[in-house]
Amino acid sequence: MTDFPKDPAPNGTVTKQLIEQLRRHPKRVVFTEGEDLRVIQAAARLVEMEAVAPILLGNRERIRNIAKEHEVSMRFIHTIDPPLSTDFKLFCQRVENMARYRNVQLASPEELVSKPHYYGALMVQYGQADAVVGGNMALPAFYFRALINTIKPLSSVPKIFGTTMLEGTHLRHLGGSGVLFLADTGLVPNPDIQQLAAIAIETGKLAHHFLGRKVHVAMLSHSTKGSAGTPDARKMAAAATLAREIALSKFLDIEIEGEIQADVALDPVASEVKLPGADQRQTADVLVFPNLDAAHISLKLLQHVAGAQNYGQLILGLARPAAQIPRTASVETIFGTAAAVAVEAIKYHQLYPDGDE
Image: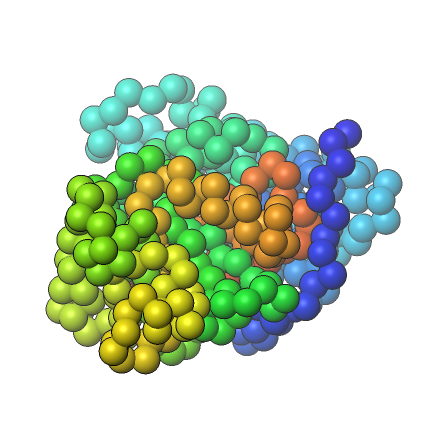
């Protein structure tokens, strides 16, 4: 079996805050790939913290045997084998109705619903779980396809995207509260101006929900305030302008700046040098990247070279909370991601006001 990264010694700053919120508002999180020791261990820890009611999808006997072999408690962890579940026929009917409503051709309902990704997404879409987490044993495309085909999209977001939350108290300038949100880290290869603005707004709203204060969003570029007049730099500047207009019209407590370089966004000293005479700036809480390559490479370098702890990615643009975890995820990443997406579910009606329309 592949050796996955060992958990770093957790400083617990982020997860402690998430768990405190969840103990007051516990949520049901369904894990689509439950036949994974890391998921079982993370689920047991969430139960121990009295924060989440985990639901593991997969072969019940296999899951319990894995837990028993590794001496992991299954107390209060619910397991569901989709084809054998009492809701299987109901979900098949709903998938059939969904395909007819959307006028699309899908595989047979029974074949789709028997797949844990689809079953888990259906549970969230129809209120039988508050959030879904998956991707730890599958290619991301399979998981994303299930989410897109099953969970209602938000009309205000042109395309779904991913946000990753980073923590690292040993790192300098990692967000204004020691937490940094990166977007889009997994889905949109080359976002246009409207998509970039939506990424800034939705990630800013999410960061505000987590941090509980005004958040600062930086639209990153190789240019700062017109220092380079390339088309890419002008695109980021235009996206920042559009995002500010949206934030103002919706009375959002989000400050959006761009286009700016990463050092200006994160390091006050660099900001003073490159923007002399400007008002004192706050360190950015959210970094919006110009394309997927820049975001994904930056995430991997921060994680594997700098040692930042990652949680997510949280999938935004859907009317229900969902998260994708990489196949190389540690138990800490799975635990923290589940806690994060569960906290997202606490104020889901405020974050996604058109989700029930």
